[in-house]
Structures are given as structure tokens and as C-alpha cells.
Image (cartoon, rainbow, N blue to C red; front, side, top):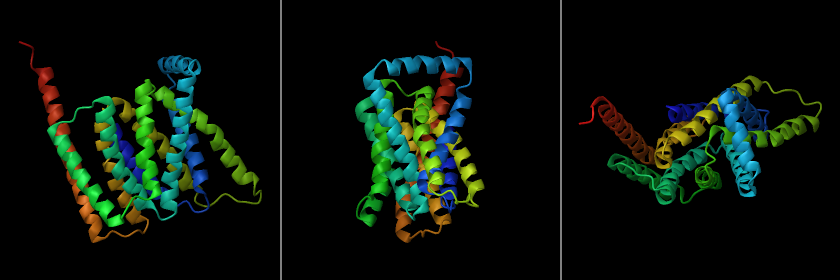
Length: 293
């Protein structure tokens, strides 16, 4: 549910991101960071969460390797947040969607090779169906544009580093966002200090709504990455590019017959995942209800 909610919110954010006239992508990214920070501070307000935050902070500061990984992951997160806002504002919403098509397949490979994740037969069928859609898109587009490469290439590194080092907690994500809040504040201050006569754009309500939804979406996204195997987390992410395509259409980009050959296999993959998840819940429920012999 956390993964699905995050995907839906990312689709809404993409639509709002295409209607933020007067704000540069760097500014929208900065505001997203600050609202994600507010959301994470609320999530970590309990005494237990603060204790975990204190413990993981000590662990990171005592290890140069972990400190470097946190800084690298913080940089990756800033780039991902930025390209997500840059795409819809510059007519590249479909490139962003394609990046999220490639991402789950890369996540499956990373999860299977490096973390030995196991997939059911139905989930492998979903991988195959999604792979067909991605292959068709590659043939149509003749390659992969750089926004798609950034999304599909950097996110798996981000999540793999978090899991490999045991830094996949919500508290570590809060530390990363605290690190990013420094450049976020600098971007916002500089954007207005450089032009003192600049007025606040009329689209500021949409900006605040987008930023607030970002806080909830990113919190759910990181939570899902912790609770799910990396491969299944990647496969569930296929809902997001479908919603991003819908956002691209709302922003005026066109849907061609060729696009149907890309998205139909993806929808089939999502249906197979839904069936797989239902069967898995059924087996778990029977296992709980039936007493051991």
C-alpha cells in the first residue's frame, strides 16, 4: 500500500510540476526537499524514533565509509528529485516515464544478483511482460535519453548502497534530507536575492501543494523500499510510469499507436503482480489460520 500510494502521488506531482510557471526546476526541487524534511520530522517525532536517529547518527559519524555513502546517496537523491521536476516542465515527461519503465527491471537484476531475492513464477511472468514493453520502447525510440538513464541508473545504486550497508532506515533518509536542506535553502535564497524585484509567481499554491505531496510520497516510497524485497519493490514501481504517462498526456504530450505496444505489456505485468500478491496473501492467511500438526 505504501508503494502504490507513493506511485499515485508521484503521478499527481508530475502533473503539478508541469504547471509551475515562474519557478525554475531547481527551486521546485528545493521546496520539495524542505517539505520532505517536515514530513520526516513528523514521522520521527516519537521517543523511539529519536533514539534510533541518535544511534544511527553515531554509527555514521564514526565510519568514514558510511559517511561517504550517505553523502553520495544524498547527491543521488537531489539529482533524482531535480530531474523529476525538470522533465515535465521541459516537455520530457515521457522520457521520465520511460526511465521509470527501465528502473524496475534494473532493480530486479540488482536484487536477484546482489541480494539473492526470490521471485515467484507469476512475478517472473510479470518481468517478462514488462521486458517486452521496455524492448518495444527501445526499438521505437532508438535508444535511451539521458533523463531516463539517470533515473534507471542511479536509483538502483541508491537503494543497493542503503541495503548493503544496513542504512535503509527512515532515520537515515532523514539524515540525507537534512544534508540536502542546506543546498535547498541556498537555492531558494539565491533565487530571490539575485532579483530583489522579483514577485512571487501566481502558481505558488500549486508549488506548496506539490511540495506537501512530495513529503508524503517520498516517505511512503522509502518505507516501501524497507518493507519489500528489492525485486518486488522494483516490480511494483511499474504503476508509477503508467501514471506518469497519464500525467504526460494531461500536460499535452501525445499518445501514439506505438505507445500502446509499450504500455499494454506493462499493464499485463501489473495485473500479474496483483494476482501474485493476492495468492501470496492467501497462502499467508492459510498458514496463520491452520494450526501446526
